[in-house]
Amino acid sequence: MVEFTKIEPTFREEEVLRYLGYGGRPPRMVEGRLGALVGVARGLLRPRAVWGVYGRAELGGKELAVLPEPIRGVELFALALCTVGDRVDDEIRALASEGKGAEALIMDALATAAVSELAEKVAKKIRGWAQGRGYSSSRAFEPGVGGFPLAGQRLIFDRLPAGELGVSLTGDLMMRPRKSLSFLIGIGKDIAEAPGPFSCAGCRKGACPFRR
Image (cartoon, rainbow, N blue to C red; front, side, top):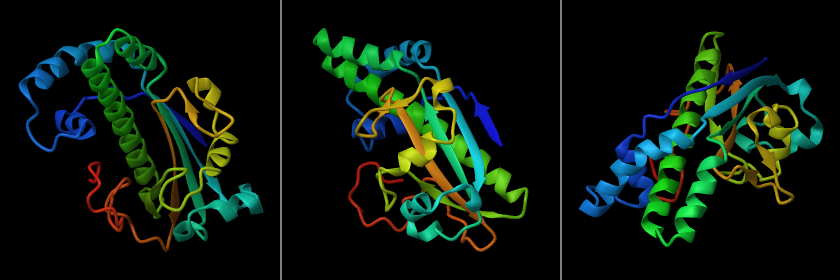
């Protein structure tokens, strides 16, 4: 099964500020520009996602070998791909070229917060699908992060219709548009349910500014 999803971002202020590196209230100048740019971002972003569930038998031996060790033996795998489109990339470059560095950074943070929120909601859909069938689900694993090699991008892009979202891979396995996010979730009867799909529980980078 493959399901397409469109979810409009809410631009949660605390999330945007976290991506800008602010743990509390930002300077008034940043706050004012952030408010002005939310509407611009909303007009530029095209948040779309696709996800699907696959059984172990549908993966080859080399693909199983690159899976994160905690979920290598599970029965099912959910693959997902999210993007907010390429127009925001163009806007970020344009702002930077015009010498509007602060605006470019804020627009970048807005786009990052939007694709992250989209991924969270897609992951919750996957968790709901699993729970409805009596399964538990792992946290989300992103290629290149947390024990899931970047080569895992091939596993995801070989199965999901990325082209229908306008997303492609470069030769070094980076995604285009830049504000795109891919991940994998393990699904099975014997998985200890993660506290959240993108939980930082267990990560040793305690000082990370993006810690949830």
